[in-house]
Length: 129
Image (cartoon, rainbow, N blue to C red; front, side, top):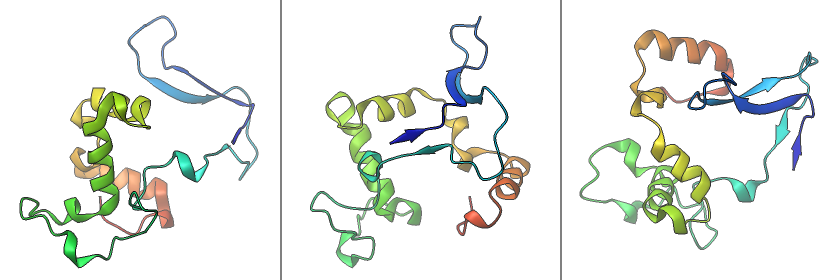
């Protein structure tokens, strides 16, 4: 685990108790300076409960899920964890996500907003938003 000491997580507006949290720099960062390192065990990924990456399983077709985005194992795992809520090992994260308005999801942004995010991400994204 690593968090750059030049970073702080705080509310965007210190005097507004319900302003959103964000990550801010306390001093100038060097180009390509490491910001943080998140252990893989803290991530909700496409790995199932048995430790297998089974995104390619053909037997996982849910008849209720007509959207191809719902067939992604990472999405399925996130939904499972969100349903578990307080008993999920990711409870603080999934409960935070559940508290956000849907407008915070990039998939619900305007085309201009998505274009800006794609420009910021550059070559780091392969899939459309």
